[in-house]
Length: 198
Image (tube, rainbow, N blue to C red):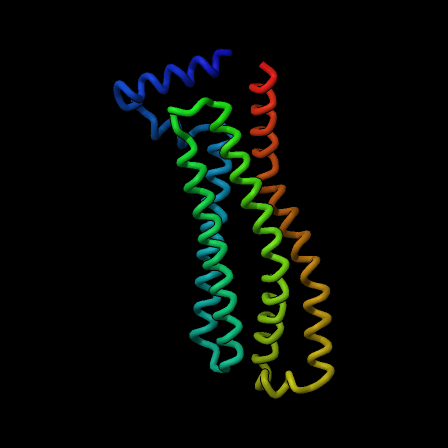
């Protein structure tokens, strides 16, 4: 196939001299691997943005319980940053010319799939925490949150919010994952199947 021959030719040229215009090619590529890299870069941008918002809230909110929950959210976002950054690095490092094209594509596909599956599982612990943090932040705007949390009806409301928002947040995140990564993962899988059948 032409693509395989091109890959081998690029590997040979890379050993002999740097590929001219490589930066421009990477920036304008429509290849699913490049699109996945861009999707992870955008995800990292959102993680940094939301982490900064929680840091700001932790600094400006006077109540210790609110600061504590904002700190927990910051820890969660640092965790997501590390996971996404590691996957982004793995994708970039798997783009090696000394591997076959099929091996490279499989490596990228497997890395992204395993990372997204891990993030889906971990979100089931983080979403209830996020629901509680938002609830307590809302309480703190009117009164002392620790005083209000001693009331039975407030605790029941918090529990209901966590029970309702956790699955809603999970399915929204799964939908967003499909929008952000699904199309490119499907294209990548189709390429892998195509190469395996040859």
